[in-house]
Image (cartoon, rainbow over all chains, first blue to last red; front, side, top):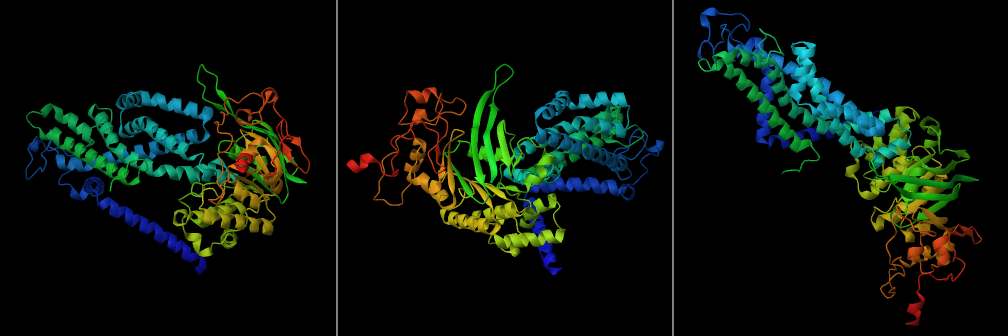
Length: 296
Length: 335
């Protein structure tokens, strides 16, 4: 038994060593750390919103309408007297929910389409890639807009609409990675043992795609947040009174010259979070993407 | 009885071609007929691009052959479906040229060697692990290496891992596709010796593909010479080196470096470029580079002829002027 336990422990050690090497390299990138910090901040804000909040996010207080930022309302209050700081905190939950829903649906769909397309080639490839091209040909926001208009407004529908626009780049990426490895000799060697295409794809092709997919996903988070906010802004995403950031900007639009904070505060939150994910994506690409030039 | 028999095996590829242009036909392998007896080693030599590796990949159906037949142990496997092919898969294995490219870098040596066993569900996981350790010992590594990853090994060791994987399924035929050309000269001999030991111990049959004429002489029983997708000469190893019939074989033999500075050889007689396999010459495909080429060579493609003792050559002039010593050049002796 000890004979088999020893190598397993050494494999675990190897993984841990690799992880700590990765962490060390990541710490050397200050912008990446900033991005990571912002990302963590968003997650913590979403988890601990009820404890961090100073007010109720929905209860109106007509005595305190449109109060500038100060001791009572840290980031000011909106036209119904609701605390903007509290609403941004709760809004982070909606943002994270949409991002997570989009990522967990679009990345697997794209991966599946791309890997199948790249591995089998021929007419399967042609058909799948032309479908992908159709989706890529239309601007993302426009396509999402059309889908929401059909499906009806709402958070889940907005997320589904974004998914429909978000998977094609993943399919392209996964296909390219698959084409690069499908005729590699180590794949041939396994094929010679009679491995089925499913086994080859699941055990040898998909793992090759994961690191570049991860980088791409991180980059896309910023875009997803922006589109979700955009849909909220034009009233096709989250509906009032939900404290969705885009919808909050939309309601603050009317007061933008006199009570600037109503629109500016959620705008700043969107800006900060998108910037954070972009920085994080940049740092991950430098570390993980085999195609990028390595900087030392 | 022959273990593997190729009958006019052909592998043509369509190259280029768009909406309005017809694709060109690349004749990578163009009708190869040869058989390999059980327990023997057939060497296959030729310049790069002559179709050696393509031939290997067509035999094991990594490519679908476009013509001819592959008969393995009496069964025509050319057109079997992947499911029907399964029982034959384990009996034909391959050793690849670049050991690093043929090993998945994210798998440990144990996983690499046991994967074929996993796929065919041979034994329990514990038995597979033990088998992996056993195989590592067989190829001159130790069970302690099993937890490591391919990048932690030297080129020679990696090739040993590749060999261990190839023999894990206890195959009958092992196709060695330039197994030593990526290795240092000092390591090459070790690997060749190990392959010979394994052959004796496990009763393996080898198809040994190489461009290294000096090494193949030691391991092969018979040697086939390929030129632009065709087998131009096939003879017992010793016979091929002493009495080559085909002018191309003589050209190859005269190009073997001699490790003696006193023996300074003249430039090889033929210097022309190899014709493109997309646009082959009429008649004999070697005629553009051949010192013996005559009118008939441009008109009629020579068929292999038997010169006795299993010596075949596809040349109209094979019976003329066969020099007994190919290495020495007559002009040099006059000088």
